Length: 326
Image 1 (cartoon, rainbow, N blue to C red):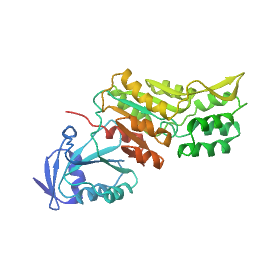
Image 2 (cartoon, rainbow, N blue to C red):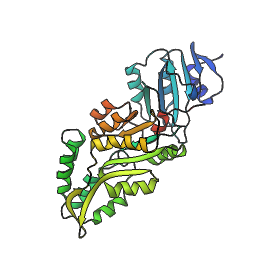
Image 3 (cartoon, rainbow, N blue to C red):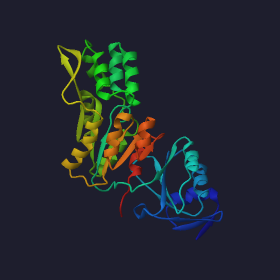
Image 4 (cartoon, rainbow, N blue to C red):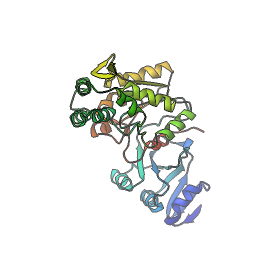
């Protein structure tokens, strides 16, 4: 067994060679990602490359004897899995997460397999893209403040979604439909989205948007990212103007939850491999329907319902929260 000081612990982990070492009297073993054990307490530390080694060292050394694995994905984030016989202290994880560019995820359930077919159903506004499309359309139409206030109430779960949707869309009556085309051309993708999509598609995952937003925007993203399906609400346009109405099936919270189920059935996605990610209260049924539900920079109600929460990092973190086999 190699013996060293805690200062070189991080370097030893990332070298990924010797199977065991001792650092300041603490025994550290090594395992491979495919040796993930559901019998142990595990935490995945995902971090930017510029995070201080000392941050990682301090967290691991405080645990005592542990086993570690380097988790690799096709992105410039890094990840170390730490497994311990003892539960992880919420205070220790919170302290780790207080550092910029690093987040620890305690794994309380078996992770879906990245290397087997899976399904990810994504919310669009504030999840796949950085904006709320209805708010942007409203600003372009000159009714931004009135619509934004209703949007925030809906996101917090304080209003019925369909009623709030219709109330907000009504304020767009008379606006030129050109604002839709203009916004499509400048949708700001959420940081990490393209990397996440690329990794999942490389492993034959199915990717779907289910949005309480509008069809032109999900259609644009579906084509841009080569997604498998996209669902949203349809605005009524007559003579080049918005009528202030939506038509057809409303994509509400229940529709989004049903999307997880019917897409899994359509593509024969095995139990345990159905994921969903969102940020607002309207995503809770979808999160609950999935085998593993992710909260992303989320409102408190959704975060409380989710299995895992990405609070500070971007969407590149998600593939590190899936496991691979031998």
